[in-house]
Length: 165
Image 1 (cartoon, one colour):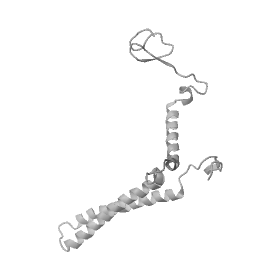
Image 2: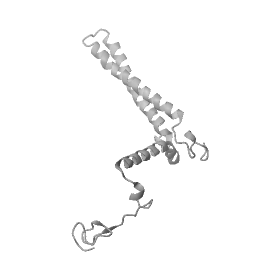
Image 3: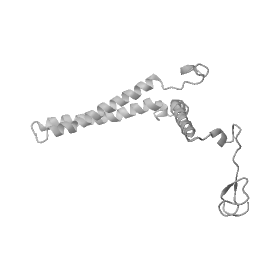
Image 4: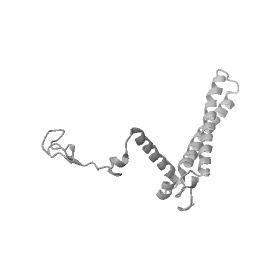
């Protein structure tokens, strides 16, 4: 999709959603982690169920150890696949390409900015006024020569040490 094509929902600009391939990798990686955890945890369950039973101990121990190793391997590989699905190949560091990493991580960067805006709105902070835009006046501070405290521009005396400004 080019810059001028309509994205999801008809908006103009770059595509801002995560591709279906990355979503699939994310969910497959998560499933691999769950299967790996269940395989690893099952070793403890079967060990507890067969506690004190030493018949065919060697082959059962080999099987349980193999299940534990496979389970840990699935957890590690699943976490890797899930991370690549979440952040993309460049965003996860698999491919060293800063431009592509920025594109891969763009939906999450936008999400974080949206979350910040929601928090500021909830706190009642108008960022435009605070930064001097949208009819607001910029805040100018004057540093006291005696103690280096920042004071408002219309202060005649320092709020910290009382020296004349």
